[in-house]
Length: 185
Image 1 (spheres, rainbow, N blue to C red):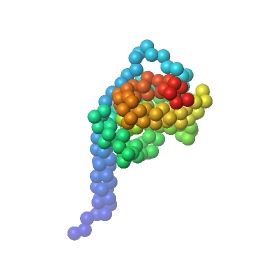
Image 2 (cartoon, one colour):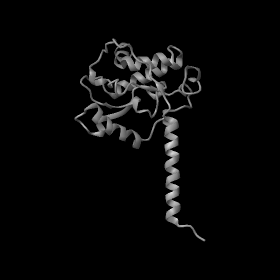
Image 3 (cartoon, helix red, strand yellow):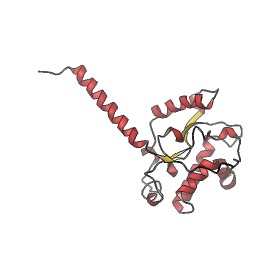
Image 4 (cartoon, helix red, strand yellow):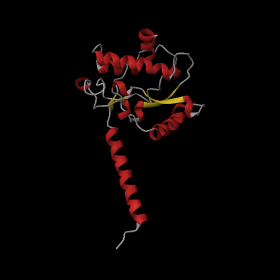
C-alpha cells in the first residue's frame, strides 16, 4: 500500500525543521563576554558602539586559549564554517532596528555584526553578540569597515602570541575604536 506523498513531504519538512532547531541550539551555547570596566570612557562617539545593555557580547566556549592553534589560528579554519546564514542575521538586523531605535531601516546600510568577532572567538549566533552596525557613522572612520580592521588586527595578535584571546575579546568590547586609533590608523 502506497503512502500519501503529501504526508511524506510534511514529515520530511518537520524532520528538517527539527534538525535546524537542534543545530542552532547547539551552536548558541555561549559564555558571557568579558565586560569592560564600568567607569571606562570610550574614545569614539556613542553611535559607533553597540548598546552594551542590548549587545554585551558573547563568546564561543568551544574556542579557548588552549585551542586557538587548532581553531581560529589554524590556516584551514574559516569564519565561513561559523557564520550563521543571512536568513538568521537579517531577522536579527530587522529586530535590531527597533531595539536600537534606528530611523534608517535600509538593510544595505548596516552589517549585522558580531561585537566579538568570530576571528577572536565570538559567539556566531547569540543575539547578545550581534547588532546592526552602520556602515556610515558620525565620524568618517567609525563604521563597520573600520571595525573589521580592528578584528583582523586583534586576530593577528592572538595568533602571534602577542596577546591572549581574553585580552583581545576584552579590548574589542571595551573600545574597538581606541584600538583602531592607537594601533591601526
